[in-house]
Length: 311
Figure 1 (spheres, rainbow, N blue to C red):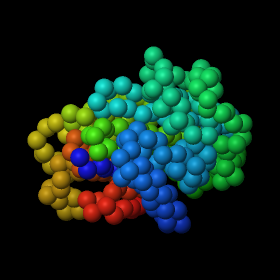
Figure 2 (tube, one colour):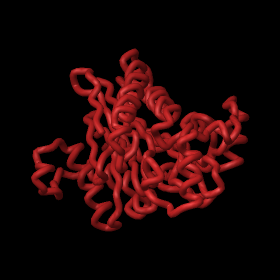
Figure 3 (cartoon, rainbow, N blue to C red):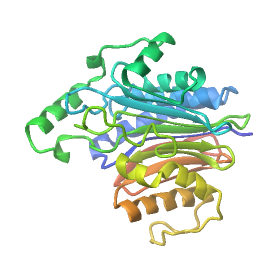
């Protein structure tokens, strides 16, 4: 089977000055994951490598450069999910881990549970050989400045790159047909300490089922949780395609993968009046994506092997 890979860097109102940085980040993430897949490597290795690139890039809300909570600290969440077994590994509330996706993978591979949080997750990570960092090592200068403005003034979008968006994700299929989906996020700016959004919750921000497809979401977490958007999108992949978006900008001659993605985002807007987006691969590895925000950073590997990135 031909391998497939798609990534995203968040759906939000990405300013013009950040477009090239977001496209570059997605391109480098694709390169990291695709180099593994084309050598016959696993989808799990590929999504971990791709997401680590995005976590290390402060233009995205994951790992280093994540949004700060009300206390001025980073709290990160991450998940990986296996489409063959429906098993996931998730971590939430991480404050001392440079690459949260690594903790999610360790939980997936080495823990009887599927989710660990906060100090317990960090203790588990350390026991499994992941080096912990200082909380301040995850704070970028841009985020500290934005947090300071939000603390002393109105919590306004003008102070920040994006308040509810910027989450990163990836979905991959390897030559053996193994399907994995993943997400990593720093959550929302000035969130209450201990807040967990959709990202690490199975079925909400992320879901994978080899019988249908794999999904990674981004957007307003509390709304995504209401419609269990990732699982909803996967279930839509099981059904005959029915286009619900008849706008001239979105004709109904799209692939089944893209139509399922659009239907899920349409439901998000209809039932919650919120914004977001998602990327997916269907069970054959065909990519799809949709968003109702002004922009979403994403990239995928086309059939000819070329990287397609856009914002």
